[in-house]
Amino acid sequence: MFASLFVLLYVAHLLADYPLQTDHQAAHKASGGWAGWSANAHHAATHIVTCGAALLAGAALLDDVDISMPVAVGALVWIGATHAVIDRRWPVQWWMHHTGQSQWAQHGGAAHVDQAAHVAALLVAALALSA
Image 1: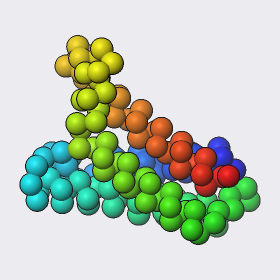
Image 2: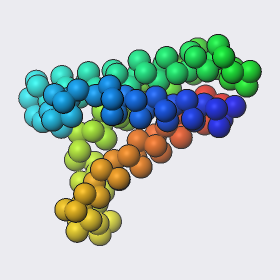
Image 3: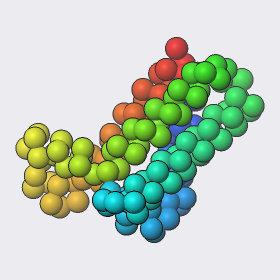
Image 4: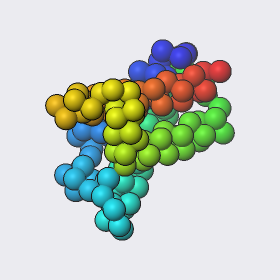
């Protein structure tokens, strides 16, 4: 069940992060003020809805997916919250600065560290759902 849940959440993540993310969200989700927080919250909500739909589809269509509603709600809150924090960009910048990756950050590495952090959060969600 873990593999199915992880794939469902990962595909939903990719959909929410790329084709379902608006230009406004991408440009402003790390900005200060109302516009930044609003863009960030809407983007995180897109992840929650998309991952929720993926979990519902998996539960309905796959024999090996049987999830608890309270655990699913917790996993979706986790996904939305971690996505919102990571996308404020300062956690990735902090990580790269404190792990000797400053040069890589200046040459496009932040996007890769960002995605790795999101995938790690999805891993935790999939583990919780399959436990």
